[in-house]
Image (cartoon, rainbow, N blue to C red; front, side, top):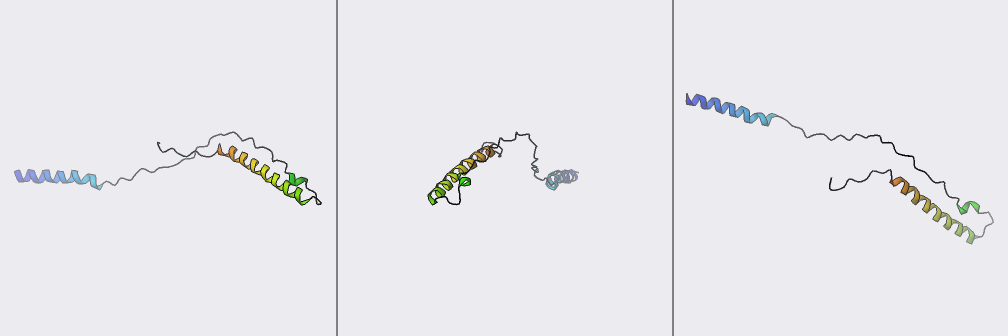
Length: 98
């Protein structure tokens, strides 16, 4: 009788212990959902007037070089201003603490 109870208990123990091993759990799936967010349209500044547009075909080489240098400076400033406006719409990097 004792042997029969031992076998039955051992059988139940085996079933209960192996039940946890047979379930296949998968890690949770992370799904990123884009949420539309209204954002104001940026106030894009007008393109600057470039000094090279005022050059004539008979302009002196020194005037041409100065006009191109001034145009490059204006375009760099315009580009930096546009990048600054655009940075407000870029995703902020996640901090290391979160």
